[in-house]
Image 1 (spheres, protein in one colour):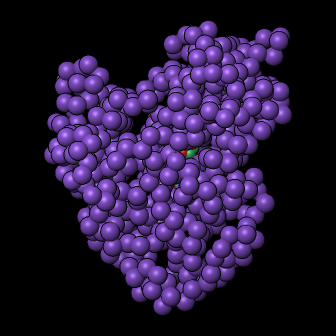
Image 2 (image 1 turned 90 degrees about the vertical axis):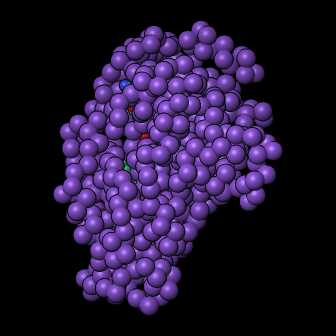
Image 3 (image 1 turned 60 degrees about the vertical axis):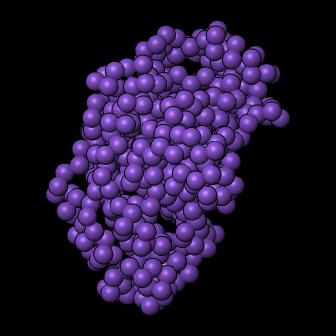
Length: 479
Ligand SMILES: Cc1cc2nc3c(=O)[nH]c(=O)nc-3n(C[C@H](O)[C@H](O)[C@H](O)COP(=O)(O)OP(=O)(O)OC[C@H]3O[C@@H](n4cnc5c(N)ncnc54)[C@H](O)[C@@H]3O)c2cc1C
């Protein structure tokens, strides 16, 4: 089937698979399905992808997260070795920098032993460390460290660029991406197909993939599926800028507690560092507020782990909500509705995304989806040269003179990169959308200097005046 045949589906509003949710999991599934003969449509309520948990996570592509032989562990293990190659194809920043897990007293050292046994049982490389060895690997770890564990296969990734890249692949292959399109009803027909009603019309489909994150319970209810008990679990973070992040060479995990993975110090691919997250069950999935008490708690926890981190200036705080629930991970066909597949993950959705997408394809094929791989199906995006990381930045001006016009001074983002983000197959529709795609505004000044330039360029591309230009996908500041 050619792209033209496949986009014919879009014109008719008829698809083989409708994916609900444009987070990292929904976009990974859409990207994978788009490389097959199946006609795929992704429906996302927000005007951009990566607006849910996929926007506000730590960006650790984990090698280990929990007990061996669970479905989640299997997907982490299957995804982990391929990150370098995958991220090269998808033009996504990734570095396998490894992690140290730190015990601060004898009781934690005992728990670390338990973790070591579990990591080994998962088949993941790890090695016990003395306190001196921990500090050799990461000199910023504090003097209270009594023992540690080295996890060399942990990596850091840009989770928003990953989500956008998956969406770009889907679109490039003829997938239909419908943003600002909230699902409000799902009706089934006797021939095994379904009609999905949205805020922007209806679509007809053979299968529905429910990747709606904290909204997955609602989607299942709309489809007459199983009750999926879920709730948002909020995680707050404090962000330190590059002046601190550049000194950090490893992810520093605290010893896992019972039922919580605790507060960690995580370098980002942008060079900043994240302190967090907390884990608090809340009611409103739209609540992304941080509060000074919780940030003070994070800093207090970090003080013993990496004392220098607690002293560095915090440039930003943010919160995101994990799709928590009775099941931390779901990837299965609904037991009541045979053409409905649920895909949700609370805490490792980024890390499982490639293998989860493969498994969704296999399950759908098993359920009767006709989906053969197309040799012409793209599995990559066109890379965008980045001023900050280019080996020879001045040569980029020959590609496009706008590389010479730096808009975000802190993160060294040029007008050329920003224009690309605004013109891409999955374009930014807001200043925040540019931040997601380029890092502009991420730095120490948090956009104080570049906001006018970003707003102007967004306004030019989206056809709005500066006063009406969206700061975030939702249109408001701070959401
Ligand atoms: C604080 C925190 C830290 C984390 N750290 C990590 C980490 O380091 N590594 C890791 O691998 N994972 C991490 N995670 C977990 C990871 O972020 C999630 O597992 C992952 O983002 C889930 O992706 P998703 O696509 O299922 O959900 P989401 O990204 O939440 O996407 C769901 C989408 O569905 C849309 N939607 C909902 N209802 C509807 C509807 N009716 N119609 C249309 N669209 C709808 C929403 O708008 C949303 O965009 C972390 C999560 C949090 C919150």
